[in-house]
Length: 411
Image (cartoon, rainbow, N blue to C red; front, side, top):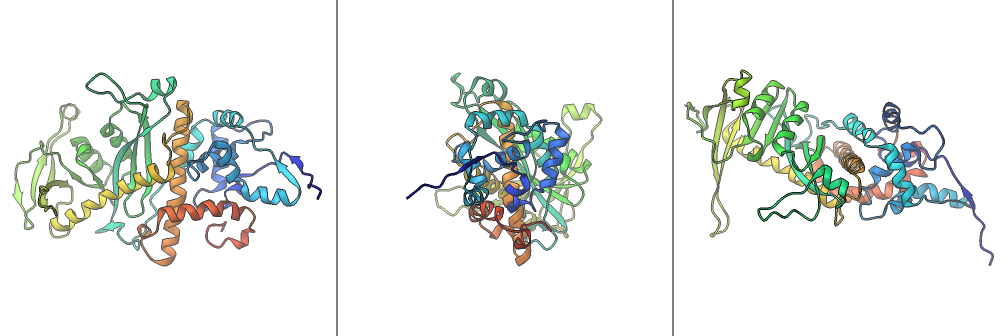
C-alpha cells in the first residue's frame, strides 16, 4: 500500500475561521479592532498573526493542561481535517515561535478586549439576578501562583512568613467584580501580591452604577467603600468586622437599626462627613453539636425596612458566595494546572490571565444565552459540561456553514 503524499502549506488562518463557536460571546470584528488600536499588527505575513495569537491565548483556558503546541493543534483541529482531505499539512510552530508571537502581541490587546466585552447580561426575567429591582453584584479577590522566575518574583512578589521565609511561588492578586445571578465577571484588576485587596476593590467600584446592589465580605469593609458606592449611584450590602462598633440611633420594626459610619482620617481631611447606615444583626445556628453559632452584622444603604426587610437582606447576602463559585470555575476548571499560570515573564502573565477571563466570559455568556432560551437561571447549567461542549464545538464549527449555526453563529 502506497502512503499518501502531503503538501506542506502555510495558510492564512483568520480568527473568524477559528472561533466561530464563540463569535456571539467575543465578536471577531472586535478582536481585529483591538489589534488595530494597539498597533501590534505585523507588517508582514506571519505563520502566527496577531488575531490567531489572541485566539490561542483565550484557548489556553479551554485546554489548560495541554502544552502550548497542543492547544494550538486543538484550536485549529477542524481546519486541519479539511486540509487533510486535500492532502495538505500545516506544520504547527514550535514553542519558541509561539512564545515570540505572544511577546509581539503584548497584553494590551487582551486587556482592551476584555474591557469591551465584559458587562452584566442578566435581564429582569433572569431568576435570582435582581432584588427589588436592583442588580446583584459582588466583589472579592484571590491569589494565583505564577512560575518562579526572577522577573515574576521581582514584579509580583512572594507572600512572607513570620519566620522570614517566603512562599514557593510568586503570586498575582486578582480582584473581581461579578454579576451574582449569572457568574459573569464584569471587571477585574491584576496586581502584585503586595497591593492590598481592599485598595484594588475600591478601584473596581468604577463599574458600579444606579440600579445595582453591591455585596462584599468583612475584609473589604471601609468608609471609603460605602462612600464611593453611594457616589457612583449604587447601593451596598456588606458584612462588618467584629471590631467595628455602631451606636443605635433608631430601632426599626424588623429589629434592624439605623446608625452612622464615620470617615477615616484621610477621608475626613478631604471633607467627608458621617454617612447613615442600617445595621442588621443575626445568628446562624450550627448544625453540629460541637460547632458554635455564627454571628453576622451587615450594613446597607437600603434604609426602608418595609421595602427591604432584614430577613430578606440576610438571606440575600449569602448569594455573595456565588463569587466563590466563580473563583472555583476560574482556578479549578480553567486553570487546572499544578502552577495555574504557565508564562515565565510578567507581561505574558498578565496576557494569559486576561485570556482566562475572556475564556470564562465566553463560557458563561453562552450559558446565559442558552438559559434565556429555556427561561431558567444560568446557575442551573453545568459550567464543566458547557466547557466540554465548547471544546468539541470549536473544531466542529470550523467546518460548518454559517447558516448551520442557529445559536452561537453570526446573526
